[in-house]
Length: 80
Image (tube, rainbow, N blue to C red):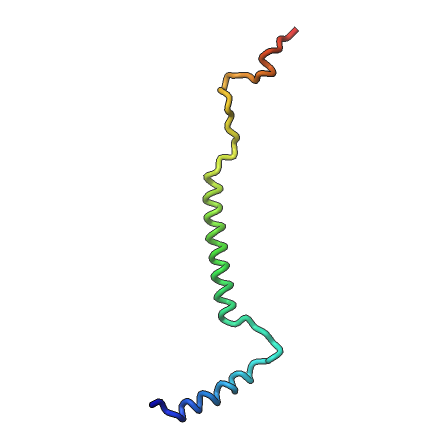
């Protein structure tokens, strides 16, 4: 059976620790920092991945026509 005096001492310490915190001030604490850090690492990883994928993109438009062919509009015209 656990020591009753130890439990009694712990219950008396909890209100004392809670009284030290200003009730009108809200802080994010350790959990807020951990969540922020995880989100920052996730954004960094996504940006690194996006940069890698953007490097693979070819921005030059490929033409459907062969290199020597002319368009139909210009083919029927002759110079005078």
